[in-house]
Length: 286
Image (cartoon, rainbow, N blue to C red; front, top):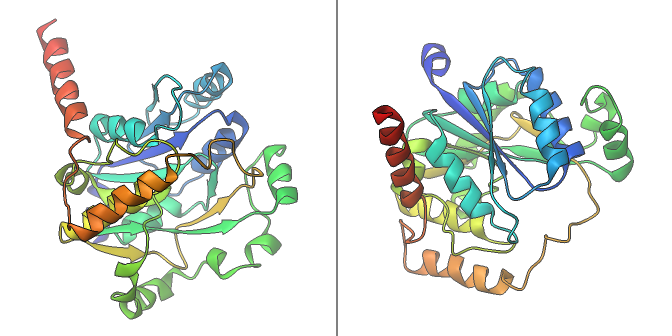
């Protein structure tokens, strides 16, 4: 992608979160020092309490880009629903989705945009941080992962000049891998074409896999941005929402998308787009 195109492209960064304000604060700290800021930040909140709202209100004052808080009532794990709302709200041409427990390298957004190209969607690399380092970061003033820690795994090595070679060598193999939605980048038009996330996925598991399958079924190729766009996953000792009785059902739904080569889901983004259009018309008539 040309530098002019990358600079002129409008970018929306979506952060998904649930009831983890200290982790979200670390994510926001790492975004404040990005070498390329997004045009807007949407926080897709799956039912958090007042502490999360307070963090967002505090940090939105520090960003030059607008920060919008999208909140839905806590009725269990409904990540697909809140992200579809965010996709519909987004004004950017290119969408970055980031989980609310991932600190990012200062070049994260710039690296994602460097490899944005028509016909592709991407997911980045992440390093799993140990509990001790996580606790240090949660209590520190700046969300900077120590250099000695970053050198401990290949997933945190920053050698972006090697990334094009890696992409060319893994172009065929990567199509069989599972999408990691929390470090994903895609064109908004491509997400609309497959109708976004399938909201039949409730409870943890396979909603990202299903989206990745349908994006590939639509003719897109998936690329893994190794050696750049690095993020650091903060340890949280598991979650009471991480596993669910829905997991087996969700796996079956994803398998159906693969076996039947489905592109669009039935219960997805389109209804949020209609709501967005109606709201715009109502505001215009006031």
